[in-house]
Image 1: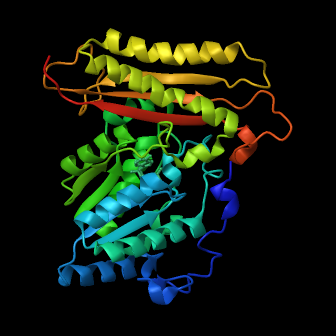
Image 2 (image 1 turned 90 degrees about the horizontal axis):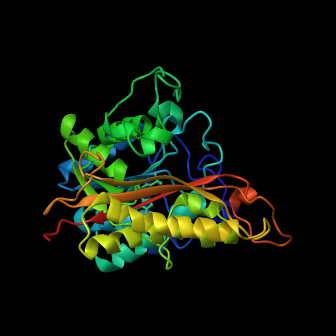
Length: 370
Ligand code: AMP
């Protein structure tokens, strides 16, 4: 599998686009054909620019990302450009949402291809007469955590936003600091950019629920917009982490969306009980697990389901029965384990398929009457 990370590892520090603390314009080759995108490393120039936009009556949609952009991110930016005259994209790999043993250093950083994708989209938007990708905010960690170095331990020292009990459920059980980091960095971004609207992907459903709760509880003056999950043609949800999957693991990873589809099908056929819905999803996971177990080490892929959940869409509490008119969210996480034995010439992913890759996905079971 061609690796985006291998193609473009340069960080914004080395790519020559930054010349000082003020916001600058980035436009690569063919710059005459492009609308330039402002790039900000620091808060004061961004704020000044934002203030000017406000005075000009422009609306700003913010798309927070950690870079390594793919079509899922691009869909968010496109939606933001549909609904706002200016789009800000933030690219920041936030250390506080990674646990101390997680893959912060290995997280893909693909500045050049990220900017290329944004410029390409910007050209499309221009021809469609849509909003502009106006600014990319790519702060340093010192900018985002100005007083204390970011702390990913528990309980951790620093200024954090915690949204409980939501943050302790599902993903939070395996990744106890994750949503504290996410909520904290989003609060900072919302305070810095002051966007009219913020855009998040349905793929990370718990994140969407937590951000909506944060905005409500802290009276953030912004509207949270959710964009549907972008998928590969076989159903795998797009993720920056997919590039760690070589061909063998990539093929088996489809089990995640297949399991959710099976659970959804059971709901659409009229089943409402947790047991009925989850049984079909578990069946898909278990069958794939057994099929893989029967293969030799050179052919098989091991994976471990972390959770399979049927939960209320706003509290994320597990539900036994989906009541009429309520709906639920069916979500799952699996860990794709490292390959036990590789074959010569095998198409490997970033990290040589030696890292465990945790994948998440979900489907919304929309409210229906029986
Ligand atoms: P990340 O860079 O992974 O932190 O993601 C930034 C934003 O993109 C988050 O709101 C994610 O939910 C969203 N996102 C990531 N993958 C997808 C996808 N496959 N479809 C839609 N949104 C996505």
